Image 1: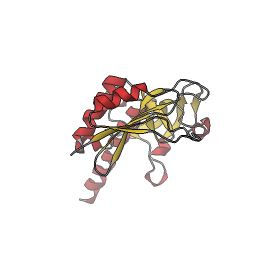
Image 2 (image 1 turned 60 degrees about the horizontal axis):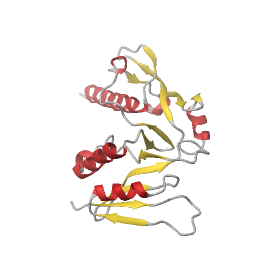
Image 3 (image 1 turned 60 degrees about the vertical axis):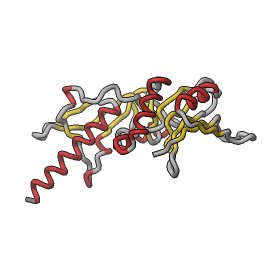
Image 4 (image 1 turned 90 degrees about the horizontal axis):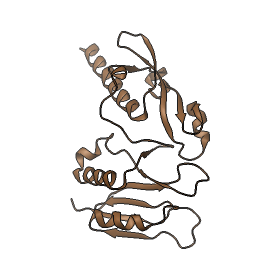
Length: 210
């Protein structure tokens, strides 16, 4: 697959001059140019092939009113398995993490810390998220810890403005024997718990159908 890389200088709305997009054959050249762009704006570093585009890094304000912005991962492509299908994307992400050292990444409607590991802490292993009516897993999240705010309900987090920084979840969980637990996983740990819980019930349904 033939890939190229691109930068966008500033995606803030209301600019009279429009966006300036530059394209590069090598990622190192794109990163070098990306670093010259104003950090106060919403600069972007991405990768593209013949028909697809992946945003890699986006520079955003962590908190309203701050003048300086920070580089964050634009998406967690690893969690959806896309990096296994596209080794070029994995290599580009690894390079961006090594060179730009982002601390956070974007999720829908929020920012969260970049995964600190690949395995759950011992107290979280083999635990199942509590399922709501109709098997809805997101109902297991009772509250979120937002930097600068504290614990807030998922509904109130949405009122914190664009991209609140969420550091931790408080979730309803249970053991396989049915004992209730209240746990506090980091967002990346929650995603691993969610994946484990879904697989556990899928396997259980298959066993019951035999």
